[in-house]
Length: 226
Image (tube, rainbow, N blue to C red; front, top):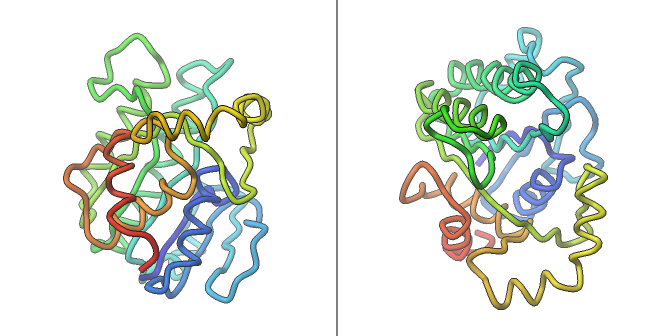
């Protein structure tokens, strides 16, 4: 498989990048972002774009891909809905429309989050915006679209969140997360299990379009590295 990853420097992005590079059935990975992934590997190339809403100049480099893992995301804290929509809905849809046109046989996997609101009418702003994004992605004509809604994710293999508040939270929870995972294996994911689940969905599909935490856990168990 040839894979595109948006957001490879984020926590989930780092996880799926690691698993993609380990997978023997992945031939090429291109990490799209404003900054380098920070990883060196024979399979990997960074595609640096200062503006992630403009793709005209790089369309030739975005063709021939089997899957896209779209893990870009920002915290909604302190944002108004218009601003958050521009960074979440607009940015995602700009990229997805281009990719659907260039790669109609692509599987597109979007990471939103637990609590995303498919009705687009709920009281929580970020959940409405994520729900609107999920709904719009399913209309673009990709071979398949899978919408990942993870909750708590334990970072493994030296992976760290880019968000300072999350780093503090994970530091505080670090002694507890392995125990919680042992007690609630279907409710606490890891960066590794999320990455493995994304690869499984790209290879073989998934039972349904929307994948909550327990669904992601089961998909990851579908098997480790090919």
